[in-house]
Length: 633
Image (cartoon, rainbow, N blue to C red; front, side):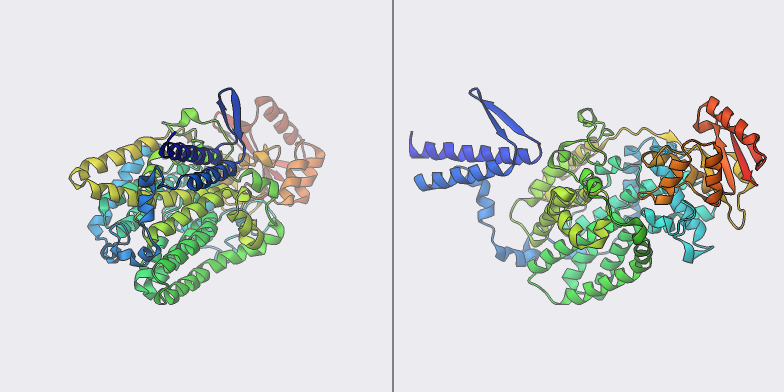
């Protein structure tokens, strides 16, 4: 065999090993059979090491250029000197677009276009505004935004002393408080709109505004509206959104692209207003989703430092961005103080829980069951760990990353590595390090949510990729744009099962609605344990119509008093269970036939009716059954 053929064979073997290593990153065990021999690679580093060894031996024995030199040629032409010439890169920062303004007409067209896209992809949600994804987390989110709009004009200093888990204080801090989304929706509550309708419009607006914000960022980075439309659609319809369609706070992503846009402008101009805009957008994102605030802080730091180094370490942006950090700290501090005050009760998350919600490589190949195109391949998987991003975002991002590069694209590639590794939680380096040294990360339960920032980065790099393709074939601009957008939409098509939320709570609450001072209420039947606590979300939803205090609750954290309550009331009704309610200060209790079987309901109310120390306040039919309200004398 000639030396050139030996070199080709060695290069092909090394390429196969590199491919095998890449595949093994996303599989638990890569096993092959060749000539009756089983080859297994349980750890991804082995094929990479073997590839390096093969190439080293090949270069020692046969000194000639690599067989696949055309693949690495663009990288060989790339040098670090290009980084400081970012403005000369046709796919780098478009300074005119970055400094330009969007007219009212253009913004209206953007809103209209992304609204049409969102309504089509989430159909039939827009014609079923009385329905939600399920009767757990959506009802909990409705209660949270309703509580803020209720409490803010009455007792703003007691905003976080919500009416659940009585008598515990600061119970709104047991989960994300949704301050900014609640403020966005408050005027509609004050005008008397229905809570479920408000929630659904807020949910749908998060898709629209996220797409618009990504459009503005990518148009500024590439100078192309067509590429920005593709990037906006990818971010607005990213599969992660359907994985978390029940989690309102995890849909509130519109502030991330705006924070990045402010960062780029501050790097370019060094103006104070751009630094303040960056800090303001970051604060809005943090107060919309505490998870994303923690993740975005790290992401902005990595991307910002890479941009700063790539632009030759300019001094002007430092002061502007420092002012932005101060502004963000001032805006976030009042909310952060409440969470710090509740930390002694909440403590830190259990390591076992964090490990369970830490992603693994194969999770990025796991589609969500709601995907119309890929759902048939969903294996069920672990909760919150169906992270398959789709093929189009990855393909376009790969085109965008291809050299010649710029500081911006290298910065976002580093951001992508950070986000993916962060989503691995305790299986990766990023989250493990942050969890060890930063207090906010000790309270995070689901590191896999870091993957949303991977989707954010893929959308940005895909915008670069789309811009490159459209520049390569300018005469096919319209057809290429339509084809790319169509493929993005087809991949994003979801199945949208919805459940109708109750338009009104049981009529029995009218007897105590608006009672001052608020009474203490216990709702029955109660869940058997905290793992079914989403059952209590329906009682929180009902409380948005009467605002009395309840011993029930639902959240990401459960105080010991709630755990004790479920344990003591497991055999309700008994003398002991009723005595325990009195010791907890309960003044009223309810029993709902809709949520239990007929025999249990009949036996329970017969026992309650026979008690001389209980008074039947109200009884009314509801949802094909009966609900009753009793007062403890």
